[in-house]
Image (cartoon, rainbow, N blue to C red):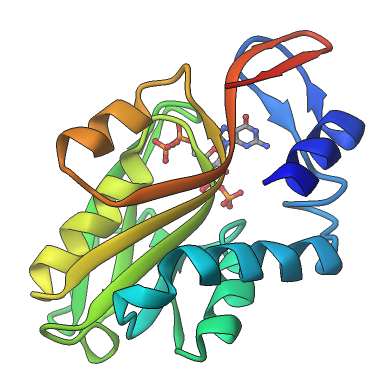
Length: 189
Ligand code: G4P
């Protein structure tokens, strides 16, 4: 997505070889007009997939997921994150490991909001190691629904996530794919 790449070049800050700071328009302050166009883009990519629901994980996935769900005119379900181990029989729960933050956390979803045979689109802001997407994939499996698409705003293609997801044959689209980061430099694929 050209507009997004231009914005990343203008306002994104490559802190080092691994981390791109985009807090002025994507995950702290949010440019709502850009988000609206991101929603249009994901709509065009996934409109023929009979999507029943968009899902994301709190917190930074919410803005692009909302923008997409409103274009598709379907509900948005926000998977909740917590670090507690309280068992609740009404929840689907799985553990996700974040390599970036070096923590494990649970993602949970009420069983009311993921129903058998629903077609699900997962949207997130970043794809790094792919663990968040894999967690969402496991929750969909538990609920017997179909993860028919994965939409990512910024993919760091040099990290392992993309490959892990391709191995599962997931239908994945990233709006900006970054080949290489180094301090002060951003190169797209
Ligand atoms: P993975 O899901 O692809 O395995 O990625 P990983 O756990 O390694 O990192 C995911 C978390 O780190 C996400 O935030 C994601 O937004 C953030 N992240 C990863 N790479 C970058 C980056 O280059 N720049 C920025 N700004 N963030 C990055 P999170 O833990 O889910 O937190 P939240 O912000 O959504 O609450």
